[in-house]
Image: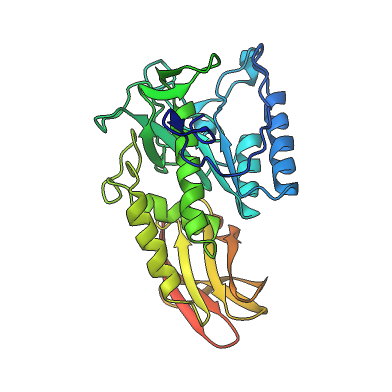
Length: 325
């Protein structure tokens, strides 16, 4: 209902005219890791039918067999199968939106998986006074990244229940689809944008972007501002090769280079010390007239400090500073 409902004068979701696939991967009677495999199968199906956005109102921390449960140290964005699959889905061009979880008031407190993914837009909850909802799961991730990414209404948010009645209810299971529907509308207004550009515009529009915390992340998004951010980006036209984004920076694990290429070509990417000494080098084939996402896994080996990323295209060279925390 929070996304798809369309009953004028009664209840309208955030993306009522979108097209949907409803894929159930959860087993409500038990909690075992096979549900992560089910989610991966659902994500693969979504990719196969051309889905643009995945909303996933679930998360895993504790299993019925305690030996299979996650520890906080494993919330590093690279351990859980479901998290790695969610990041792969994002690399395919889908926007993956996921509930942060409802453990903020219990002993666990933290987000679950796949909300810990660095390419997953995880959504916490606030109330109608824009105040953090105490049940909403908290960050950061085990490797220190900001989570949740953003927060929307999740406390006393009105939904349509199984009987067809509009009632208030609580949960990041509602704030996440609210965000997914809004993201769909934003993306519809900017079809030339990539999923990660939409992701970053939503973050940058949020009210705590300059002072994020572990409760609501970058805060509550302003979709009008996000629209303006994407309009500025598209207005530039990107007629020539350019680095659109290099994130996260500072970083702990890998970095994603978002490169606009004016033509099909092979680019050279080098990691340099501050003095200009080459530390690593790799080549990547990129496609023309789109934003290409390049995963820079080689930076995982770097020690703490400042480095330079050099990107050589057929026509230009770009150099950006990065910081390894």
